[in-house]
Amino acid sequence: MRTSNGAVRFSRDAATTLRVVLAEDDVLLREGMARLLAEAGFDVVAQAGDAEDLLRKAFAHKPDVVIVDVQMPPRHEDDGLLAAIEVRRRMPETGVLVLSQFYEAGYALQLIGERAEGVGYLLKERVGDVSAFVDAVRRVAAGGSALDPEVVSRMLGRRGGDDPLARLTPRELEVLGVMAEGKSNTGIGSALSVTEAAVEKHVTAILRKLEIGMVSSEHRRVHAVLAYVRSGAAR
Image (cartoon, rainbow, N blue to C red; front, side):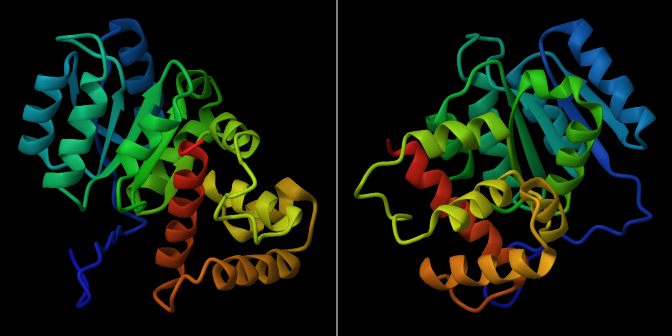
């Protein structure tokens, strides 16, 4: 659903069971994730073992979120990523969470494109942290963002002197980095051991310094995340 200004609106009733299409060519891993998701209350409506099957099932079932591995058949290259990008293009109301064996900033940038709403990029090892994995799926389904902490850390390390985020203070960069992981102000405060009031001040300063206009709160946050990802992926 889109607002009057053309933005995608993700509206999920908290009481509604979220529907998932899961794509992974490793059968054991796929079945394991499906079981974890089912136990967490998701409805895994379809599973796919290759990128083409993912597209067929995603377009048929129109799930709340698609979870897909980057490298999948038929080419075993970036087939899953390309399928995820196509899902975002044709079904912008569907959240997309991509899983990758390795860190690759370019993949994250391709996936996000011009719109950071409803998108996540996690390393596969994060699936072992069930609560973090489930939380990422829920955030993406709700229209938020979820970047792997390792991805965020490496993006910080790749920043240069001409970086567009150079105007931010070290603490503001830390706040933006945790924000990119998809955490709320409460979660950011817990991660950085600061008060929620302090986090709110930092977030306000970040949005002002990045000149992100007055749109909805969540939309402004994902625009900040988009600026962050572009900055890190350009290095």
